[in-house]
Image (cartoon, rainbow, N blue to C red; front, side):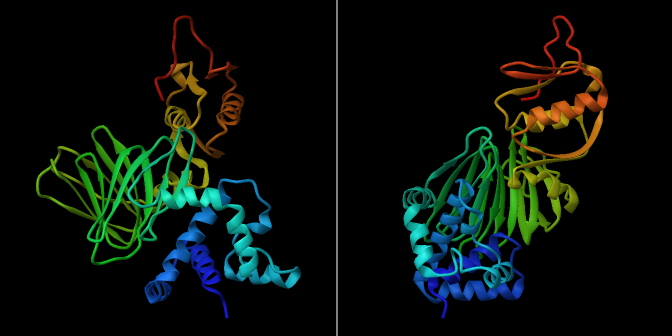
Length: 329
């Protein structure tokens, strides 16, 4: 019989990987509620997976989906996560890292530096994935689940709990969910909401009584002051915008100015468009978020324009005397 830790690892891989269908979600909810030890085991599994994602380890130490795991087992000896002793040894080896992660998931402020993307398991088994230079305050109590997005962008995989709605605030904007998945990016004038699973309710405390329901594959910008909000169904665009969760930037006919602005969210070395005539050139491509130099070389080769690389900037196009380039940051 599988141990509790094995069961937790299996649920973690399926839930954070391909996601659960309705039947599996009911099974997971029942398993989680059946024994308080299940909750602790699941949190440990999330924390260890998060630590593995930010450490250099052998690939055979990473958890695998069940089918892939079984296929690997037939070819070679059992690997980590398949037997409790190995799971325990791995947990012990990562005890310090995981302890810090588990400490950060209750009522705390979660922060990522520029260029850092990180996943945090929350105490209710929800997951918060923070984009570069983001800051989130988490308050989980017996009666409420409140998250304040103070800066940047975050994607939330919300554990289902009808008694305690999960409410995210971003300035005056509010997003309410029960068991769903969605992203919020904060702007000075409001917040953009992208729904990847389920349904959320959005509104602004300063924008009047109107509320808007967003379902899977829909996005909306919720202004702080304006009362009008409109949803648009754009699943492909949502997937493109959330590619950062895999450390990637995807461009599908975005302009060079837009692409540079995206890269500058992550890189300490700033991309600069030195020739204004290049701002509107459209591109299609996929790059690692931490590879602005590769992107710049490709762009300059494609457009046949000069590339200049300095200690603190990468200049695309011919620099003109006195011209400071684009303002993207």
